[in-house]
Image 1 (cartoon, rainbow, N blue to C red):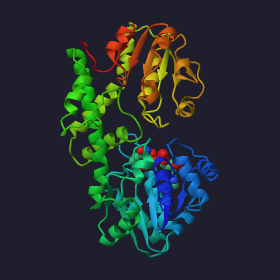
Image 2 (image 1 turned 90 degrees about the horizontal axis):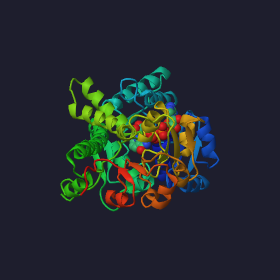
Image 3 (image 1 turned 60 degrees about the vertical axis):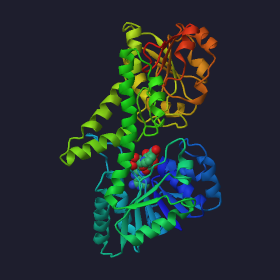
Image 4 (image 1 turned 180 degrees about the horizontal axis):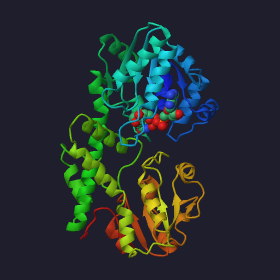
Length: 443
Ligand code: NAD
């Protein structure tokens, strides 16, 4: 099949590479000349495990190509995927500028039937706006050609994106046209072999499904963070509570880890956007507003603990920071808790010595060179003379570090752990002061 994908970011590039891998001919269109130039040279602009090989192999086989030329994109694919960004605009609702621009582009160049598939996360009603924008651009040319607009939200997780795309839990397809539903089934057949994964529904329900999934996952995290803060005050250990509740199959162990807040390009923006959508429809979504505000507060927790520990005297101090990405196995720092922490430390006059296995280039891109930030070559290097070690991302190799070395290098034996990686009793025995999340007075 011939497929065009607009947007070569995390979602577009993974979608393109995976669809090419099963034999389709995929053309990826982006408006960023630097990105397209790099992709054409086999240089993958983002870190996603396995993606570089998949892109290079399929490009070499001639099944995956890249272009800036949107007209060529419209001509190429029967299936036209929209996978462009939908960042929050000033009031938190989703900014649809890029999505609607792609719709107009398709309308400007289309001469025959096309299936326009929205993979970006967009508010309910966006398919109608895509349809209208495309129809207007077509009408302006005096062309009549049929098209369908499908909602096909993406559920992949950064860090496991290829596995998620190749073996999805479900493939949500929202369409009001049964014939288009069958085309989509055919497109996804290679990913739907072991059992039925395609969930067909109407367009609006599909659009809402994506927000519902992300909002529920964010709610679980904020709920646990709320309880963690309470556990600290009550002298309870949230990690014991977590295991105690997770064993109930109605609750389960997934997504109930307390921490220093959720980040990334999806949860913060999607919870905000859904709350704004609710407000726009005349409904006050109180739970969603609380999920968001609990998370904002949680991102401040490590700084608050540090501030209290040093009686507010942070000026001139240095801190070792382990982890910059919003979660392990990605270089994505969008809305990452590390940013909130670093910015608060800088405002307080402190210095940060940071390490992350893959997000250092992203950190450099965001903050540039600054005297109060040192990006170190290893976790150990960050410790040199630091007043405390702060852990923000749960990379696996932070789980069992050399505590003797940490103690030796730090100016104070103090660890603030935003991901509850260690056993508080062990750290106490080793002579550390260990401040984690929700681990009140552990017996
Ligand atoms: P991204 O910012 O990584 O990539 C978006 C790309 O779109 C950029 O390369 C940009 O240059 C390009 N673009 C912008 N306007 C364009 C246009 N008119 N034509 C062609 N390309 C254009 O974004 P992302 O993380 O891949 O997210 C894309 C969408 O998918 C968002 O709506 C997001 O919410 C959703 N989503 C993301 C994830 C994730 O884990 N990142 C998961 C599921 C869904």
